[in-house]
Amino acid sequence: MDAAFTAEQDEIRRTLREILGKRCGPDEVKAAVRTAAGHDRELWQQLAERLGLPGLAVSEEYGGVGCTPGDLALACEETGRALLPSPLLATAALCVPLITALGTAGQRSALLPPLAAGGLTAALAVPGQALATALALTGDNAAGPWSGGGRAGGVQARAAGAEGGWRLYGEAAQVLDGHSASLLLVAAHTGGFARSRTLLFLVREDAPGLVRSRQTALDETRPQARIQLRDVPAELLGGEDADVLEALAATGRTAAAVLAAEAVGAAGQALARTVEYVRQREQFGRAIGSFQAVKHRLADLYVQVEAARSAAYYAAWDQRQGPLALAQGLEALRMTASEAIQLHGGIGFTWEHDAHLYFKRAAADELLFGPVHRLRAYAADRAGLFTPSATPEKVAV
Image 1 (cartoon, helix red, strand yellow):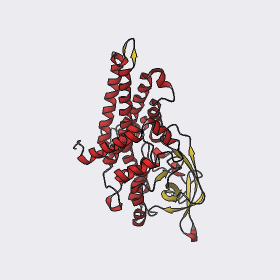
Image 2 (cartoon, helix red, strand yellow):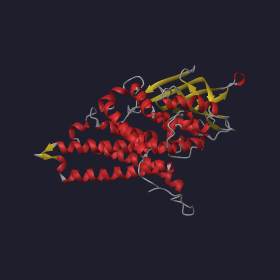
Image 3 (cartoon, helix red, strand yellow):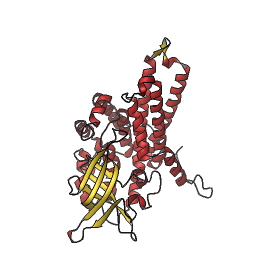
Image 4 (cartoon, one colour):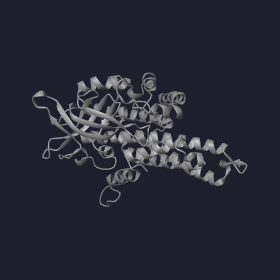
């Protein structure tokens, strides 16, 4: 593989860093997450119009930029540096690939152009708290219980009969940007117990019977919502014979690679800010960064962040390694944020300090997409590392 970035990729990174440096400082982030939308709508439109950010994952046929998942991952490394609150992950990394893979020609033509332009945002609603399982990151998503399994719970779908279409009822929690998204992709169980299967449905924000409420989340930069569906009309995404579970798993691998790059960006920035602080903070008449113990801790963090960056870049090229790269990225972010709080001393332990934004991002992402040990355990199981008779699948180290 060629690890060098193209001129276009370097330009995307440079321009994005420049814009976010001016418009997405810690104070602006805190102000944006407290708005009704949970993000700065004006900044989102600027990123969409100037860089085509949400269109990176959309082909040129539908008005997008037509880039590879690797380009989206590199862009998300920059958004991770700034902890940008935006619908980018929910829209471009989770929903666009599903609509592209499963949608009919009419659905793709109707939905992908506005998604690429940033005027339409989307969110993936998975029943309960099973997003990592649905995306096949921490376990096999073929088992039905996470989507309802033919029994009570989850989200259930039934054909509307003579009226045509479908009706949904049930509840989904921890839906990323679900309170503000114009379009919901809802994973629902249908077919009863005998013909149990999971399908995806499109639900508009103004659908009757749809109730959305923003939840209090550990990480405010990752707004989450509770979605209640009370006999809501819905449109089936694609056909009834669509391989939804495989599409979800493929989307999970790509999203993991994107999240890994985002985590690396956040970890790198947390480390850089900590290094800057220990150079300025003095104790016993000298900068605390000059003490050998502090140097060793920072050196260990640097090695961990760079190893996670290498894994993230490899996963951006080969999305099959996304879950492992995500595990390494989340671990690096958690360790870097923890050390940042420690090395900032007393001020670092106050909730108002910016170091906690990075720590909360690490903890919240583990709750949503992990935890780290389960990401690694499932990857090891799939690779056959603990089955001597099996031929191990090639796994990036």
